[in-house]
Length: 189
Length: 143
Figure 1 (cartoon, each protein chain N blue to C red):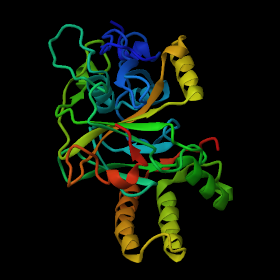
Figure 2: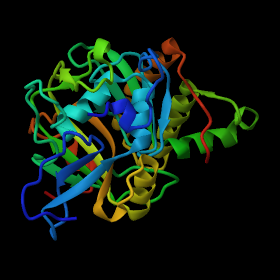
Figure 3: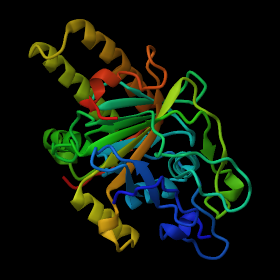
Figure 4: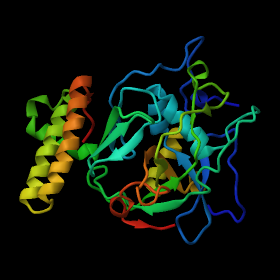
């Protein structure tokens, strides 16, 4: 639900994050990360993907070790709508919004601390790239994600974070992804 | 503070640590894509078209993986063609060749310019070469 003040993410709850809302009726949205995605990345041993989520999407996960965080999805450069491709048996994907950030830093998990409670550490920043986060605003999908992650207050969650990637930047505007004019339906923020 | 493993119900018992990285294609239903990486790194995604994304090393000119998007539809279409193999894992090379062939049809239908086809084919060939050398296969998904 919308919040009148800039919210901050709870360091003890990594699965929930606040984001700038793409909807004009409210300022901020509360998002939940897809448990299927996160379990998949953890189960596959993808330290980089988990580090990116914690450092660049949540941004406030560190217990006490003074590692600089990020504003995550509260400070996007742009938000686009609709990925213009088939998704799940050709259903519409107009509920999908793409958050673009330019964090300038990156995170990973060192192998020796892999997925421990110590939080991520700084990682190599991909060259000539921007960071994209794919969020779906769909009640059925929200309820499924909340159920699977054991979060019972479904009505407090506005969207589900499905995926995230560093992506090549546009030659003519390095703060936005390449082909941004053709790969999405519209820029909403 | 709970570890990430605990929060996502993936705590391991005793001294067992989180699983080590193993290159393997995995389907993610949320965004309906198949992801394959041969390296655990923050790759740079390079969108080829609505079906294929090449994944490059963060700082080297080196392909480290690929994404097949709209995977359910691709898998279903190919399973129907390869009836006898529908219950088995399918080599990703076959999927890429199927998609590449579909591009030809787009040109015939006037939906794609010839010069654009050549550009796309070059990149599909890169993905095919990579998938062949990595022996990437896709497990069956519910369609």
